[in-house]
Length: 155
Image (cartoon, rainbow, N blue to C red; front, top):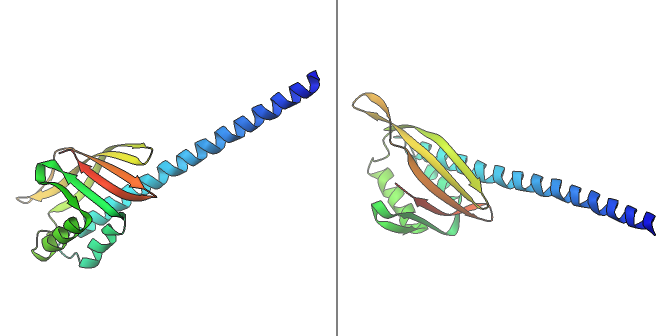
């Protein structure tokens, strides 16, 4: 009887250890996938901000979003639907607001959690012939099924 108990405890311990390793690998893979989406978002935004950007560049950014995506920026007007943000991006592109002034988007810090990423970043911009690091800004990304469902700007 004691032998069966020892074997059962050993098997349980082994299964628990294997499950723990699998859970750690799944968590790491999940965080890596969120990190990849955020990096892609900033890479595509940078391309969109250039003078030679196209509507297709804007479309590529919006492929990262859920259908019910919302963008929240209290300082600049509040909450925008996916359609509002898309139309504003197209309007900015057509009006020449995407003019290459942004020369880099510098990621300063990032915290990746369960279906959320907080980023501290700054825009590196060309102003009066000089390259200047902008003020650090905080952005929260929320995710559903691997896509960005909400961006909340805290700047």
